[in-house]
Structures are given as structure tokens and as C-alpha cells.
Amino acid sequence: MKIEKAEVLVSSPDRNFVTLRITTDDGLVGLGDGTLNGRELSVASYLEAHVVPLLIGRDAHRIEDTWQYLYRGAYWRRGPVTMAAIAAVDIALWDIKAKAANLPLYQLLGGASRDGVRAYGHASGVDIPELFDSIREHQALGYQAIRVQTGVPGLGSVYGVASSPTVGGARYDYEPARRTALPVEEKWDTAAYLRHVPTVFEAVRSEFGPELTLLHDGHHRMTPIQAAKLGKSLEPYDLFWLEDCTPGENAEALRLVRQHTVTPLAIGEVFNTVWDYQTLITDQLIDYVRSAVTHAGGISALKKIMDFAAQFQIKSGIHGPTDISPVGMAAALHLDLAIHNFGIQEYMRHGDATNEVFIQSFRFEDGYLHPGDLPGLGVSYDDQVASKFPYQSAYLPVNRLQDGTVHDW
Ligand code: CS2
Ligand code: MG
Image (cartoon, rainbow, N blue to C red):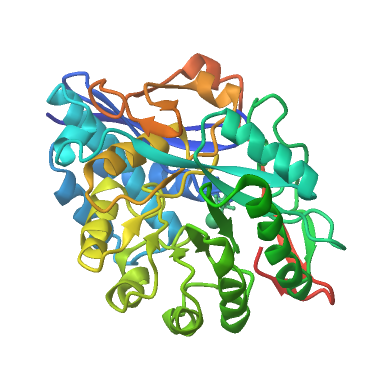
């Protein structure tokens, strides 16, 4: 079964997506996600210029060989652009292989290890009343696990807070990438944030009780000792995890946090290979692996990372924001269903325009997701609808401290 055609499809329903479509000589079609928020065209050009010409004529069944060929053959290793491009190829080839077997992809990954994939959604509010409304909206949608983000008194717009959260359960409308020629800039004050967050969880717990599964994303903004302080201050509120509490490139930073708090730690959405996790996993400095299939080199690579993590009782928490396309989301769900060390799946829910371009078989019911049982990933791409949404330049915000110093967003 040879690769006959590979198309790089860039469309922008609700937001920009990069999709790779591979077609074989016997007419099978596979889709892959190569979306990298704010740097989409980098991945698209990497695929068009340096990957697609190498794919034509290759045996579509040779997924592992193709992965190694693209990883080692590039000479220059790792990085978000390279690994998103390789992921797009890997996901598309797994889609094809499962279609050739006439099986849903999870059956090729070991079959189902559970009945459904527990999901968490994003509740947010500029203040506590708005946050409570958003939590109730998400409970009404069926979520049993909810991420909590709020505004910080004295600050303007901050990460994770929708400008106008869902009304009537339409959907969480926080799209971080702004369609502007230059990145918008936000102001940050970690001390104000550290004072405020414990009061938010105190209010949420007293309003919603001890059972509701709660998560929080620190979004890389704290120093290790600040992260340790927050983790310790949140212990009474029994979080499922504190995510990206401090930049994860330095594993020793997590070791310091780990010495001070038993709040579970999740990290890795900006990582792109197993090497980013090596010490964090072997020294058990984290509890959840956050990579998306799209950003960690594909299904082949993320399954290897999760099999490695399983030896250290570390579980998955695959990244699932709106900037992971429904193709990347479907790939995550097939992996979630099959691996034993599944933790939880992020599910922000895509917008209506996105769901018109990407027709999906996965379903969300009573807080659980399931990839469906169509052959392959279970996603198809509507070119005609996609053509209505051409690429639009969009950037993630840039964050600065009160004195103007650039800070992690
Ligand atoms: C966030 C992401 O969902 C999350 O945990 O960290 O939404 C992140 O802000 C975006 O993926 C950035 O593009
Ligand atoms: Mg995050």
C-alpha cells in the first residue's frame, strides 16, 4: 500500500488548524494534526517543503520506519515544529492502517481498557459569581471534572478567563490566540495571584462541596518556591492536579516543588519528546503527563512515553484545548481508551465552525468521551466548508510583569 498523495490543509474555522491528508494508491485516506498555536505556518511549510516530497511512494504500513526516517533523517532533532510535523504524518498513517484493518484505531493499540474516557472542562470567571455560573454551566453539560481559572483583582485579562463565558452551555469561548498582526500584551502580578487563588478554591469548595474534581493551571508563571507555596496552600482543597506550576525545562525545579507539597503535579503540554520528561518520570517528580499527541510526535511517540511513565505509576492527562484539532483530539481518545495508565482527558470543546470542517464520530456523554467505532480515527475533513475559512494570522498573548519585564504567558 503506497503513499500516492499528501496534502497540507490550512483552514481557520474559529481558529487556525494544520491538517495533513495522506491518500494511498488503493484510495485509503488518513488525516493527521500538525497544529501549533501561533506558529501554524512553520509546521505547514516544514511539511510541504521537507516531508511531503519524502512520503510519496513510501509503504503506508511502515509507520515506525517512517517515524524514525523523519526523526533521524532530519539530523536536527526535536523541537515543537519538527515534532508536530512528524506527529501529523504518524497520526495519518495510523488512521490509514486502522481503516485498512476496518477497525477503530484503539483496537490496534491493545483494545479498550475502559468503557469511557473521563474528561475535564474549563470553567472560568472574571470574579467568583461568574466563575460559579461557569462551573454550573459545565456541570449541566455533564462534566464531573472541572478546571478552575479566574481573574485576579487588580489585573486586566489573564490567561484562562473567557471574555464572555458560556451562556446556556453554548461552549467555553476562551480562544487564547488573537487574530491580530502583533501579539496582544497582558500584565501579570504573581504575588497578587498567589494571594487570590486559595480564596477562590475556598469559595468553590464551600459552594460545590468536596466531591467535585477540581484542577488548576499555573501556566508556567511561578518560580519553584512560589509554585511550592501555591501547591501547599491548595492542599486543603484537594485538587486533582496543579498544572504547569513552574517552567518544566528544569526538572530540578519540580524536585523543589515536590519537597513542599502533596498537591499532584501535571506538566508537559509544551514538551515534544520523551527526553523532556526523562528525569521528571524516573524521579517521580510529576503525577501526570500533559503532552498532546499532536505536539509529542504522534501516537507512536506518545504511547512510548506513556508506557515509560506507567513503570513509575504516572498517568496521562492529554492536552485537549481548542488549538488541538478534532483530528488530534480523536487520536488522543483512541490512546486514552487503550492505555492502562490513563488519568484524565482535557476537553474544551470546539466551536460550531470547527465541527463543520471536521466531522467527528467521538461523543461526550455524562462527563465521559468515547472515540466511536468507525474504522480509523473516526474524523473526516470537509474541503468545501474549510475553503470558507482561510488562514488568518493569530498570536498567543505576550505577558509582562508590572515593571514591563517579559514573563511566561
Ligand atoms: C492550556 C492551553 O489547556 C491548557 O491547559 O495550557 O489552552 C494553552 O494555553 C494553549 O494550548 C496555548 O495554545
Ligand atoms: Mg495548560
